[in-house]
Amino acid sequence: MTTTRTFYKLQGAGNDFVVFDARNGDVTLERLIAAAPRICDRRFGIGADGVMALFPPRHDEHYEMIYRNADGSYAGMCGNGGRCIARLATYLGVSATHRFSVHGHTYTAQVEPSQVDIQLPAEPQISIITDDHFDKIFDVNTGTEHIVIECDENFLNDSDNLRKIGRSMRFDERFAPKGTNVNFFSNYADSGRIRLVTYERGVEDLTLACGTGALAAAIVHAQINDPVNSVNQRIIVENNGGNLTTSFNLRDGKATNLHLIGPAEIVFKGEFSV
Image (cartoon, rainbow, N blue to C red; front, side):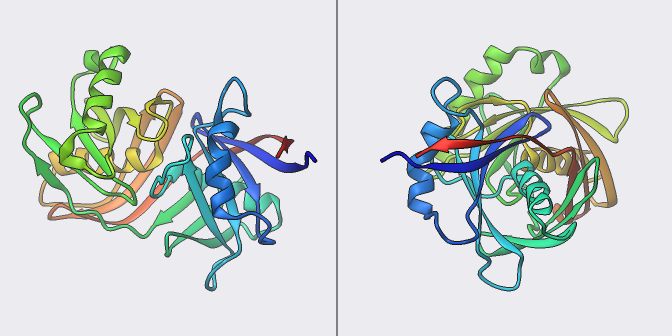
């Protein structure tokens, strides 16, 4: 017998997600993982970069955020996903200012009509990896694994090359077994703005935006411009899907008080055949 479940399609700066409200406990993690490839397939399913669900809270948060990549694999934290699920939570009756958990860590959301601001608990320490092809590769975990590569503007315009390099670096043995997300960014004359293109693992392609990648690239940008002390940094990250604002403190290569701010909207609501 075929049954259906209500789902919501959301997007934040072009990152799109299918989200289920499972706070009543009727969806298991195993079922979500198994269904993710079909749900996220853009021809035979709904189509999305990833699938999420609101699960019952484990502690005193309002809910637990469960996220899986489009192929069902583990993803760590998804920044734009976090902003989108916070938007849906307020639509479902949760207060505009609320807390949710991801992998045992607590995030704070402030949902406004035009944007969603989430504060991330990660306190990443920048490390530098030597490489035969790039001068420096920066390793920054902003809730999930990221490497960041600075390049010029023309380099960012060659999508085929970025895809090729991103795929190679994502599976590089230096980042095994989890692999990594690969971020390419360029600076503008304005130190408060950068342009970013991200190759996302799990999606296995360039995506229109990546929230935790935007934070990673912005932190590296701040480190390059002021390697000793960058307090109250506010950097706009231009993605192909839209702009995200990042905010953080940086001291001696360690970032704290991370905020990711940007648009998040419910695109439509529907029924999915199970």
